[in-house]
Length: 243
Ligand code: PGA
Image (tube, rainbow, N blue to C red; front, side):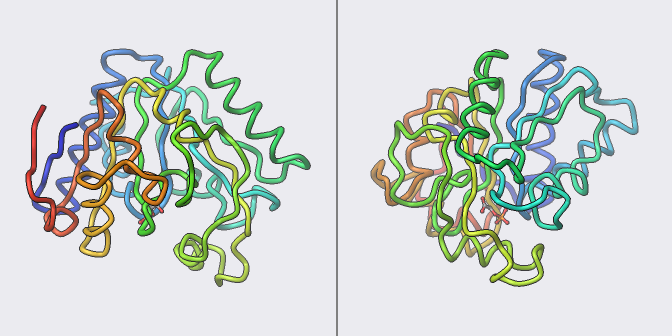
C-alpha cells in the first residue's frame, strides 16, 4: 500500500488525473472504474482539460460506474448516471452504468458485474471513501467476499446525497453496487480522500484492522493500492509510506 499525502485537494486532483491518464497511456482501451461524489470532481475537470489540450485521449477507454441508486428513472437529478453526464466531460468509448430504473435491480447489477468481468475486468479502479468507511455502496457490515448486489443505504450515505436529490427523503433507500471482492479484482486501486471530516475513517481504513465495520479497510489486502490524501484527511495517519 502506498499513502501519498499532498498539500491540498487541488494536488490530489492532479495526482489522480496523472494516474488515470497513465493507465490510458499504457493501455488506450483501458477499463476504468470511476466513482461519483464530491471527491473526484476536480480530477474529472482536470481530465477534460487535458483532453482539450490533446494531452490525453480517452476515445478507446471504457468507464464503469461502481455503483448506482436503485428504483428511480435514470434521468432523475442525483443518480450516478446524471452525475457522470454533468461532471465527467470526456469523450470515452463507452460509459457503462447500471440502469437505476431496472425492474429487477439484483439481476441488473449481477449482469453488469458479469459483463465487466467478461470484458476483462478493471485495469484501474478509483474510489472515494464515505464518512462511514464505505467504498462504492459497500456499507459497514459488508464482507471481504461480497459481490455485486442490491444494498440498503445507511442514513449517512443518503444524507451525503441529499443536495443532489433535493432532500434526504428523496434519496432512494437502495443502491446497486460492485462488491468488495469485485473491487479487489481490479488490477490497480486508487483511493482519494480530502478534508478533515474523512481523517478518522481514513486512519481506520489504513492503519486499523481489516474489518466489515470499515469496508475500505479490506483494501489493505490488495497488492497495488494507492491512497491520495490531502493534509487534512491525512492528519492522524501516523506513517505516510511508500512501498
Ligand atoms: P464524497 O463521497 O466524495 O461526496 O465525500 C464519497 C463517498 O461517499 O464514497
